[in-house]
Amino acid sequence: MSSSNNSKSKDSSQRPSDENTTPMDNVGVDEEQEQDQQEQQNKAYTVLAMYKFFVLRLPVEEMKRRLEDFLRPRNVRGLLLLAADEGVNGTLSYPSNHNEEIHEFLKDLFNENNKNNENENESESSHDHQQQQQQ
Image (cartoon, rainbow, N blue to C red; front, side, top):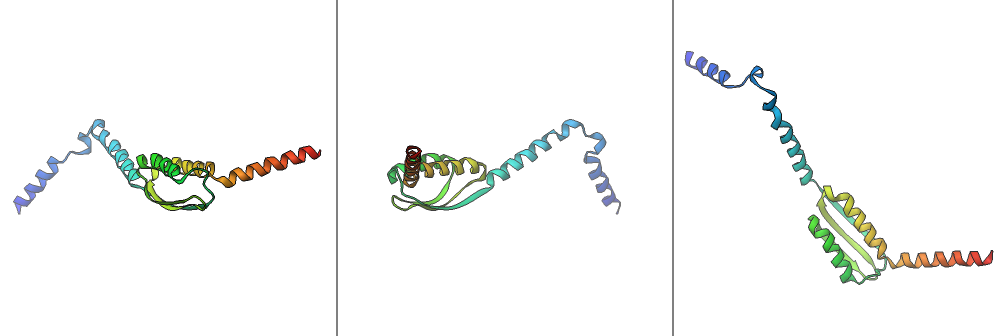
């Protein structure tokens, strides 16, 4: 029985007590926590399902090139179907830390290459011009 008591006393003497720790002993803890949080954020993924009906202004190959050039370096995976007369349909998965820039890129690309937008803008300006002539 006395041998087990000795092992307990050895264990407690080997552990540092709070009195023996210095502020420098805890420096790595915050850095480790920040690193763990960063790793968790890097592991978080967003899944984006989308569709938009519109007529492409650019050739499908050009749209494909622009999408690949932007999405590939950001580790985006998924499937996008592009059809010249129908628009886009697909699902993408990507690290969540790229969420805003990917949304903005896709929105800008699809709005910029929408022939329907051009027709709407032309008809609006034509309508405005007719109203000005009538006045």
